[in-house]
Length: 344
Length: 177
Image 1 (cartoon, rainbow over the protein chains, first blue to last red):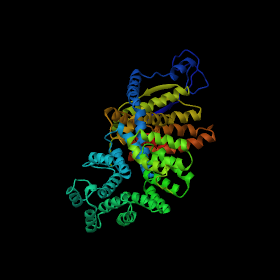
Image 2 (image 1 turned 180 degrees about the vertical axis):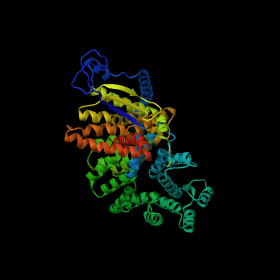
Image 3 (image 1 turned 60 degrees about the vertical axis):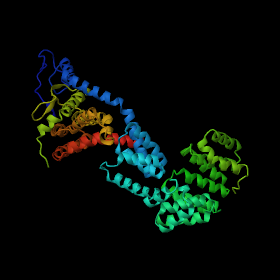
Image 4 (image 1 turned 135 degrees about the vertical axis):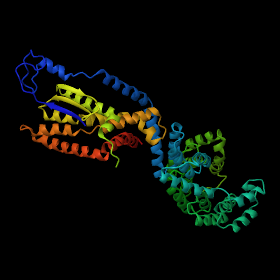
């Protein structure tokens, strides 16, 4: 409904506008050069200029926020892409950055909840769950994923009956006698959490055979139950079956490429198999993903040790002494280095 | 299908009409074509127009006709850029963001050249001395303009406006991430 209309006019010898000067015959309109220039520069009215200036002003104001919005959008997309690639550590990092600018974004909160589940970050998971509960979702795909992880999360907490048992003691699992836990587990064969807790107790008592049986039972019920897969990585390595340990690590890594526990465990199993260079490479990659995790740092320390890199190893040990959170993980590594513990 | 008179749509989306006519005028100025009258907006049919001299250069003629498609689309995308993410992606849009989205969609909706523009190209192409390349480029453009014009009956112009406002910022994000 808008047009550009072309005019054809008969061509007299004088300019049809000023009626004085001779026309420029090279063009269709009978205009002199001066009038032609005037019409080429047909004035743009002031109200159009003011309208344009108003739009420009609003635009400038909005453009000020553009860099932070673009960066937020990029963090959000990177987070979502990382989830698609099963890189949940990156996903959680990117989504948290996105949420600093858009704290109420349902999308960012939802995907952060999903990634925190895969990273076993229960604090973040609960925080996001509290924000999202009772909300309505338009994105059904996201909602299905949230429901899926929420349902899986049920297996990471004790059932009411198990909690009642724990409450009979001082409220911690360690306080419940192992016989009582066994009794409970045999009465509740489908309770993966109880069986895992029991496996964990046997694992720390160095009873790997019993821990293996219990964790295997859990994995028969829930093939992707992460704590059971994690414990199996350790059990198999302590049982001297590094290949089987790597198999369990790979199973975890298939679910989460950036599970630093599985990566570090795999590196330790490679060290057991005397594949020292491969182990060091993996330990370094893991350290790039998470340079704070104590188990990762201790694994890198062991990898340096078996690759003859004493300087780097000792630097890590020195660093660990300044951080109580990592010192615990270094105790075993230092014992291996000092040959107090037989590693291979 | 909801039928809303074209004049009412033009009234609501008047910024797009103004930019459309301004684009014709600026392209005329760029190619040194005299302009005799410009109506940036009015309540009538057409709701805006530019009267200019017949253009002997076919390339210039085509560009003057399709100029609004380029200018309106580009300007709409730029205006939508800072507002699209808060409105469509983050759900944090404020009044300013919605104002920019309205401006962007209005401007993009009037990006399509009108059938009057198509007729200008058609008449220029019919002239005897028209080179073959101009016909090869020009006739499909005329066809596309008519398709766009008929498409506006099924809200193609509005769909185009929303796509420009929504898709461009998302495309940038996808490329950066």
